[in-house]
Length: 331
Image: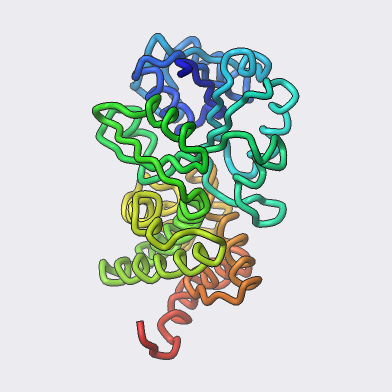
């Protein structure tokens, strides 16, 4: 059992996971692609930009050198935005040993073809490479602050899932293992689309009834597409499905929800993005989810209207009206 882990991505979530592993006694190396940012983290021993006033444990070290990452550990946890996921793995591949194990906390789809991220891991490395996903209802700030949290670790490699769970599990952080990698991936990606929709509704001044309806019907959309892609229905009732959906749709720590709020309040996509200043995964996920729904002929009206707001300039009020104007049907 290794006591070393390298985390790629020095944003809020990657930093929080690195802090968790280090706090649990694991020798941890956090990598970021901006050398100046990493130098600031080394100097301050905290991530002022994303997680202020939460100091690093002595077990946490930092680097902007991928070769140092490869030499440090064969267990690598990737937490970069989905659009950078494949490129990061391709740069890492020639540096690591054949025994490397790849985990990721990235939520989203392959920007090139709408595929799932485990397919990128198999393409860049091998279908035999141990691969695992960390997902579930977890805001970075709360994990970094050591507040109670429960997540899912999904993998078809049970030993690797158990190893990663041992590294992350603590008396304040509960890690459940799950063999349904596809279901966990789909739930983590599409919940961001629904969080944008819920934010739009709240930004328009609609109430708790609307939010509850969006979350519930949004869950139905996630299940329909998730099962089509090979996920198990029960997975979507767990932490990486319903749990993550509730979190991101109802709390303003969610960047996707805040983005939707801004749109509902009349701001443009560009203005909302600039205001938040961090990656909003639901924007690209909305496009990929919509295209997948079209490909498989799956009814996903909330996804469709969110896509049209983001990519076709549809007024958010008209999008809501389009949803309400649909013909009555059995639930």
